[in-house]
Image (cartoon, rainbow, N blue to C red; front, side):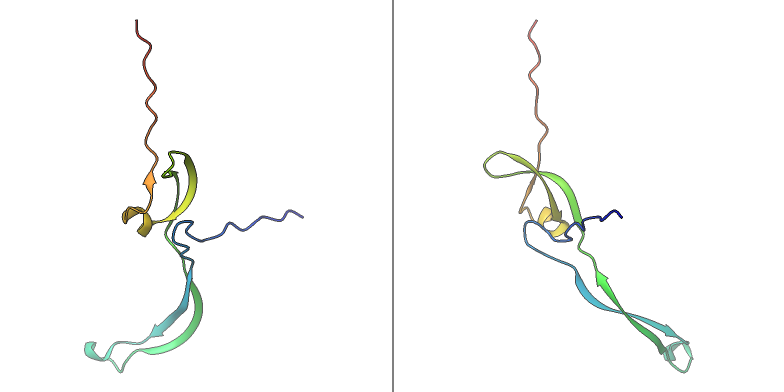
Length: 92
């Protein structure tokens, strides 16, 4: 039997993790459309996943590391995406 390790669904910068809520199934026609109203037919639990991006990040001390970062940290400027290394050309 092969066991697979579950990768943590957590941002390595801010620590954001999945939220929990409900998924509500409904049937019927809404009252404002001329129906008798929407009825709830089922409620089930669900997870709201974090928008994680796995990317190479340049740390403040100049080292580069691969991290799982949420989109809000990336857009908010909390991390810097790695810049491409420039290899000097050989002079002729």
